[in-house]
Image 1: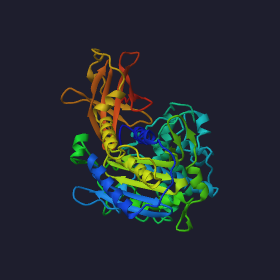
Image 2: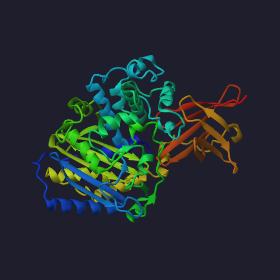
Image 3: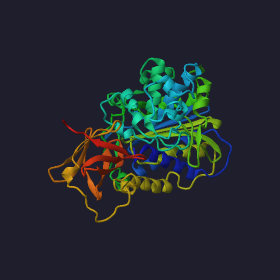
Image 4: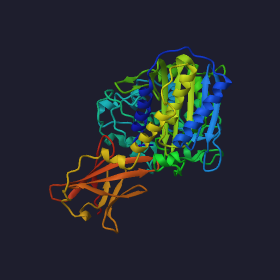
Length: 508
C-alpha cells in the first residue's frame, strides 16, 4: 500500500485515463500466435521493472482463453496460476455483491439507513445516522475521512471500533465528495453479518465463494500464509534496484481482520476468472445462477461521479478507447492485484502480483484489450512508458515523498516547552492510544500499539514522523496544545484529511 489506498487508486486511474485515447475497432478471436506474443511481451515487461512474480487470466466470450504465470512466488519457487495472493481491495466487490444478494432477497434495501440494520453505527450528527445507507458506504460518499490506520493492530472487535465512529467528524457533506474509505466497508460488512446472523467471513464464503466454486480462495491473510503455494510479498529500495531484480521480502501484514470486508480475501487467477465470468454473465456461471442479475447490475451501476472518478459499489467505471470498463485494484503489504472487465465485449483480465509499486499490473489488462479489440496501440504501454511510470511510482512511494504532505515549515521556531512536558499518555475515543516519551538519546518518540518511532521537530510545538508500517507509509503530524494554565493538555494528530485531538491521560 502506498501513501494511502486513495493514492493507490489515483495512480491506477490516472494511468488508465492517460492511455484511454483512440477509437472502437472490431474484436477478433485470439490465436496461438497471439498467446505466444502475449507471454513474451508480459515477461519482457515484468523483468524490465522488477516484478518478482505474477499471474494473468484472460476471460473472453465465457471462456478462460489464457492463463500464464511469471517469475517467482518467493525466493526460489515459481509463481504458478494456482499461486495464492492477498487480493486486498478486490475484496470490496465481494462484500458489495454479498449485500446485493440480501437486497435481491428482500432482506435489506440499498437505501435504507444502516442504523436500522446495525444500531451500533451512529454518527455525531443525528441527520447522518438517519441517512447513511449501504450505497453511501460502498461508493465512498459518506463524507468521512479515511481513518483506517487507527484500526491497525488494535485489540478490539469490529463492532467496538464501529461504535467509536460517533466520535469522528466528517470532512465533507454526505454525498458531496468521494473519499476512499476502508472503514466504511467494515461497517457495511458488519451490517450484512447482523442481517444474516453470521460473521461477514461466513456471509461471503456461503454467498459467493462456495457457490462460485472458488475452492482455492478464502478469508484472512493469516490463513493464506499457512496454505501451500502462496506468494510472499516483495518490495524494492529503489526503482534501479527493482530493475536489477534486487527485491527484498516484505513482512506480510496480517492485521487486516477488523476492516476485513475492505480487503482480506486471498485467491488465485483461476478462481478470480470464475468470479469475472459470473460478473460478465449477469451472475451466471456454467449455466447456474450464482448471483441475482439485479445484484450484478446494482454493483456496476454509477452511484457517484465527479471530474475524477465514477464509482459503483466495489468497482470503478470508465471507458478505455471507446470500450466500457469496470475495474478495481488492490494493494496491501507488497501484494498488488487488478481486475478489469469490459462487459459490453464479454472480456475480463485478472492480474495478481507479489510486488508493490509497479504499474505493470494495471497496464497489462489494457495491453490485452488493445490486442483483442484490435485497437490502436499505445506507444510504450508495456515498455518505455511503463518504465517511466514505474520510476515515478517508486518516487511517490519513497519515504522522502511523505514530506510533501506536511504543512510548510516555519524556520528557526523552537518548541515553547521542554520535551519532557510533551511526554505522557494520550487518548481519543476513536484513535489509537498514543504514548509520547523522551528516549534514552533525549529525542521525543511516539508509541502507537506495537509501533514506535522517533519524532522530528517541525516548528513551534509541532513534530512530524514518517510512519512506516508493513502495510504502507503515512505522514504523521503532531501538534501539542497549551491550555489556559500554561501546561500541555492536548495533542492534535493528523494522519489524513481530519486531525484527531487527543487529551492527556491523568493518572490518579
